[in-house]
Amino acid sequence: MKALHAVLILFVLSAFASSASAETAVEAIAAHKHMGVASCSNSVCHGASQPFRDSDVMQNEFAIWQEFDPHAKAYQVLEQPKSKAIAQKLGLGDPTKAQVCLDCHADNVPAADRGERFQISDGVGCEACHGGSESWLNAHADRKVAHADNLAKGMYPTEDPIKRAQLCLSCHMGEKERMITHRIMGAGHPRLSFELDTFTWLHPHYKVDANWIKRRGDWNGVRDWAVGQGVAAENLLSLLLDPKTGWQGIFPELVLFNCQACHKLMKDNNWGPRQGTGLGPGVVRLNDANLVTFRYALAPVDKTAAQRVFEQTRDLHRATTQSRDATFAAARTLRATLESLLPKVAAYNFDAASLDPIFASMVADGERGEFRDYAAAEQASMAAQSLVVAFENDGKLDKAKDATLKARLDTLYNAVKDENNYSMTSFVAALKSLRSAAP
Ligand code: HEC
Ligand code: HEC
Ligand code: HEC
Ligand code: HEC
Image (cartoon, rainbow, N blue to C red):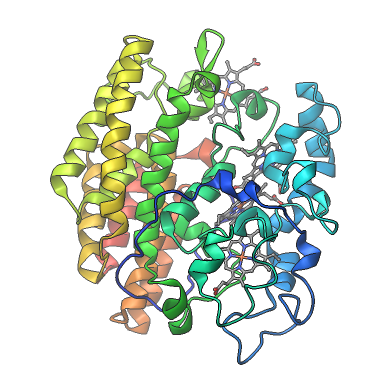
């Protein structure tokens, strides 16, 4: 895992979920003209150098984005030698002109949807996430205009965890229209991994306080983590089920599978069983990391449902050794289960009492050998970060306990730092030691 060290950000925590509206989709982001980052960056708009005092929002979002947010450099990455090398191996020519790269490394809306100040070199700009601003740009700064009015005019509901997960994952995992393939990985692209809560707080240009909650609805980081796992698991199944993205010739798209299932050294010879797959040795397995972690999210919400996800995941693994039809059928069943559970998870109040059941189910899985696969361990470490932040927000930790918890979280992160040097034993030991320090 990349240098995601355990930076803990405290913010106002509140219970409850916003109710997810059904129809806004990532696709709708391109439905309105994108006016360009320059349309947002005026110093009296979002281009202030310091936060405004009496404003609902900080208004220095542009400065933060430009200076700290990797999205602002996403296009420049394509100008670098490492991108040229990837593109050359794939026969794509100039990566700054290649649609497949631009779709994720820039706000690549069709030419007709680009306003006068739009520049592709702005990378993943404001409107790539907040939606084309053509219809809301002028009105949205007026305090009398309700957020719902902006949403109706094409602003993206970034506050809604399900919708936010779908947005982020459309680039951080890939989707039908923006796919990252094993061929791109084979050419040298970094492996993608994502966790909604952790990644939301890595380079924030926003703050969530009482004012935000009043305007935008409730905030709960653990809920965001939980929702992010469910949406990612659903996305995996949708990609697998899609004939265009799920299959490459006679092989399924390998990017959907566990990288280490193939990329490990033959001399290791350390296969062991995993109940969660039910598979024997020598079988390529789907990357079920998000499915594994989503079960932990379900632990406080609905234990029977967690068991159902466990069983249906195992059915899916088994089906991949049988036939394509069996795989599709099992994937559809599991996807329907996830779809029915997501609204429940998004509406669940992940309060302090819900944290230990999550931890307990992770540790129990660890003891059963479920973290044999690196990808699940990496996800579990980010889940643990989300829980630690929640314990801190709950305010029951004294300084010494907080320091111990942070130190043990760092140890856990260290155990997944290098995917080529991962030891399940050290990881599980670190996980247990972290839980024993939790309140
Ligand atoms: C599905 C979306 C997607 C596609 C398609 C995609 N990328 Fe990426 N790329 C990402 C994401 C997300 C990251 C950041 C990964 C992280 O840090 O978690 C990234 C990271 C990179 C990096 C490493 C950046 C760094 O800061 O070191 C390079 C280089 C890169 N991409 C080049 C390319 C090239 C060239 C193409 C086209 C062949 C391409 N990407 C296609 C999403 C994508
Ligand atoms: C990678 C996606 C992404 C990009 C790019 C992005 N934002 Fe955001 N933005 C978010 C998320 C997520 C939030 C937090 C949730 C929310 O407040 O809706 C947010 C919050 C905000 C808020 C606070 C909203 C409120 O009501 O408190 C403002 C203002 C904002 N962004 C402006 C910008 C501007 C201006 C840019 C470009 C310079 C930008 N954003 C680029 C994702 C993004
Ligand atoms: C249009 C595609 C796109 C969308 C949408 C998107 N990202 Fe990204 N993101 C990228 C790319 C590309 C990179 C790598 C940029 C680079 O290396 O400079 C990246 C990098 C990041 C990083 C830095 C990762 C690291 O290892 O430091 C974080 C954090 C991140 N994104 C969070 C988010 C979140 C949270 C959302 C949703 C609110 C989101 N992204 C939506 C394309 C996207
Ligand atoms: C079904 C087995 C399988 C899975 C699963 C798999 N790979 Fe591969 N990978 C291969 C094969 C086969 C090659 C081609 C090796 C060659 O060209 O000699 C390869 C090549 C690569 C290469 C280029 C290595 C080189 O030396 O040129 C990278 C990088 C890579 N894969 C990354 C990944 C990542 C990241 C994942 C998970 C998202 C993954 N692979 C999943 C089988 C797999």
